[in-house]
Length: 519
Ligand SMILES: *Cc1c(COP(=O)(O)O)cnc(C)c1O
Image 1 (tube, protein in one colour):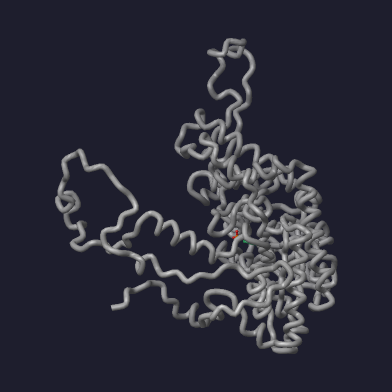
Image 2 (cartoon, rainbow, N blue to C red):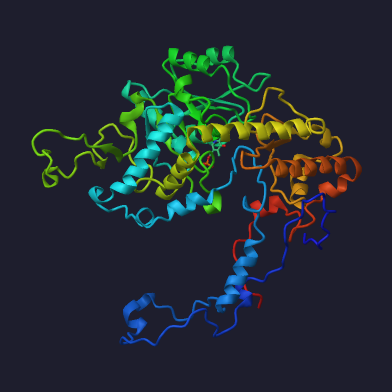
């Protein structure tokens, strides 16, 4: 359905984002246009058919032909259709869509770091290796763990790596074990990870507060349990206050505690998983540590573990050669062995689970995450945690009279409502989310976590000011009023975008992935 531009009445300072109609770059093409001018060739022209042989195409590729300004305008206009954190609040719960500070970008573009070649010999790559090593130390300190790998390229990839460590350790004890326990509030990637690592998934029911039922856990853990995968704070934004007891129950049966650390934004500087019994966990640098998400990525999902899992970490592992004292270091620079105190990659790791990623991981993200950590410092990081929790609780307090709050337990960095009251008028969480687009906001996370029927999962992060939070609250309150007075308006939203409601089933089942010229 194409919208005819009936924008909502503007509310306070909120405005719908810009819409334009833009033809495809192929449709804008006209023969002979070029976006470049090259000097004439001053080398002999070789017939491409001779060089390429059979691979030489007989017809042109029919690439679009446009001038430079046409190309720039085309893509600039398209970019205005995207919603982005640089345009406004992006309250996508569980995703921690925080601002990507510009200083990170400046640091990541420092020539010696940006252009370091992965095959450069270690002795000539000490700068970038120091950056990587310092980030490792910071993350180990923040998590309270003993060792870390930065290789995994995303959160789910970190889970995979972490559970491989769990499996390798159990195997080294003589039995890989059979199953992994996962609470019903878990992120979908957790059961997928367990299954792909060859484990059976056993569901663990949450208690009335949305936490783990300790008695049920004690009954379910046995000698075939490899681990429990637990998100803390959970996906309903609640801190698992019994976590140390959960760890004890698992450890008593030889099982391990895996923590999905995607929600570390609520813990950094406040509590360390290593101190409350976690054996292995992943972090999402593209959530907690402000590196770009999605199209602006790539992601990075480091895995931190306790010392007993360290021998199994993916290769290579960064090690620092001990400074050698004595003969050869008597003060003459030329006599100091080249590798003294230097960092190098160690590939000789007999118990390793193997590589999980080409080279060393997404190095550009390491630089950005380290810039964020160092720019904030310990007090600043603690403050970001406090502000993230404060912002989520502000939204909760401002909306709980209009939206149902299924779990009353104190919220951490995100708040989860349900659409129970609005559903009585036939309006569901997905409708409210689409209407939010008309008010200029990216939707919150819809219908997740599964344990909340019709969930509205809202995570503002610490990036948002009081002013922006108030605009969001106004929009949500206004939508609640619309649900009462003109529910159809909400059910047919969005009205201000280039296209309105898409047939999502049709789009998933019969996607049209290729443009064809009209004959
Ligand atoms: C985001 C998230 C993941 C997965 O991270 P990706 O980088 O998207 O793979 C896993 N668990 C939780 C709780 C998350 O929020």
